[in-house]
Amino acid sequence: MITDPETLKQLLKHGSLSPLEETLEIKRKKGSLFIGIPKETSFQENRVALTPEAVSLLTSNGHRVKVESKAGEHSRFTDNDYSECGAEICHEAKGVFECDIILKVAPPSEEEIDLMPGKQTLISALQLSVQPKAILEKLSQKKITAVAWDYIQDDHGIFPVVRALGEIAGNTSILIASELLSNPKGKGMMFGGITGVQPTEVVIIGAGTVGEYAARAALGLGASVKVFDTNIAKLRRLQNDIGVRIFTSVLQPKLVHKALLRADVVIGAMRAPLGRTPCVVSEEMVQEMKPGSVLIDISIDQGGCFETSRITNHNEPTFIKHDVIHYCVPNVASRVSRTASIALSNIFSPILIDMGERGGVVDYIRSEIGFRNGIYLYKGTLTSEVLGKVFGLPFKDIELLILGL
Image 1 (cartoon, rainbow, N blue to C red):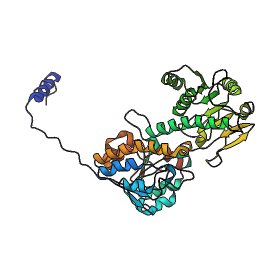
Image 2: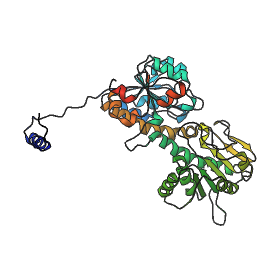
Image 3: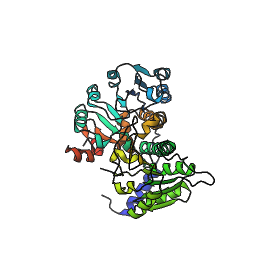
Image 4: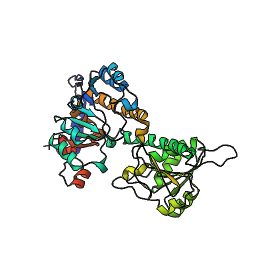
């Protein structure tokens, strides 16, 4: 046995210079996907996971797509739009839920899971805060591989769906604020500012994607913007990305209180990694705000960051408390459903095309670590440590399952 390091190096060098047999590239096996797009049944969920243009791309690449009738009607996509792009229109939900891959926006209901024969792949939002234990158990019993699209990462470690929806929520929050300010119940103000008139004072709590795009939109309309966050690194990133000097500060109660006294619009854009969003604005602070000012709580789906917030919906989006207009709709992106549907489709269609090129779901999961990050059930086995601890269920690492351990 050779143990001398120099001798081993010489042998390796000699071996690398020896002639080798010619190796030919083996073409990767392409798989044909069978994708189902059901109609969303969740309350005021107006989005659809794939647009007709994305369906056309998939069918032209040899994939089969079933779309439930009227799945895209709230985003102004007709059944005819889908059928002309190669989709099969299904008039019963059961036909769609029998597909190998089910792509939807909201998590499935128990009734929808009952329609699934089993051993399929489900790609949808996880919505941890409203996920009942019975849903997980039913999916597990049917050996479903479930992927939360809000946890899928791209090659740069970014969560593309969360980013896209955050951009939409940030921009839309300013448009909503503009509408509410000019409303007769508001202050009768134009959002922004003109020569000789003081600009609108906007306070944004949270310097993530929502906060950044709210700040961009507000600055674009000529408003004066102040951004608060608990993380100085996020504030620095926002300041650098926007490219304009604005007021930024860490969350200090006295500074927030002072800013709220002058604010015309306040955007709550705080996010918590897990659990409830911290409540950073007390009822006393809201009481002292200017009458007719607008408060928009984008964080309401995690509990909200204003003490006076309570969940509203798209039919009755606002309420007035202490003479302040509150807008607390959890699903802001559903208000602009067509834009949101196109944004989601732009993310999912390349993933599905790549999945087909790599031979199907299993091979894609093995090769794409960012996609694996979104898996919380793999062939019926719970792989999410968070869900396991929340519901007291056994879980296993996805990496071990892929290796067959």
